[in-house]
Image (cartoon, rainbow, N blue to C red; front, side, top):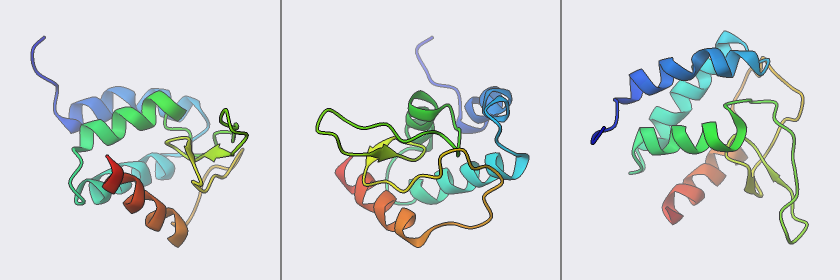
Length: 109
């Protein structure tokens, strides 16, 4: 295939996999909203979402491993200095530091 599917198709094709991680429907909806909001900074929605799926399978409660320099890498994109919520689901609000960090990350892409 020489073209990507649209964001909605890619997202919907991965919903079941995200829900299998323990995410609630609300968690999955918040991922959708966060991707659309982050894309306003200039990075294509599909790229952001594919990074999320590759790094955490969309699991908002993904664990926080350490990188080769022993720095914690957390969150949906498993990036250094990213806030994480290991083992937690049904998250109810966005952490302001998360939004600040996501903007910083997207400026580097």
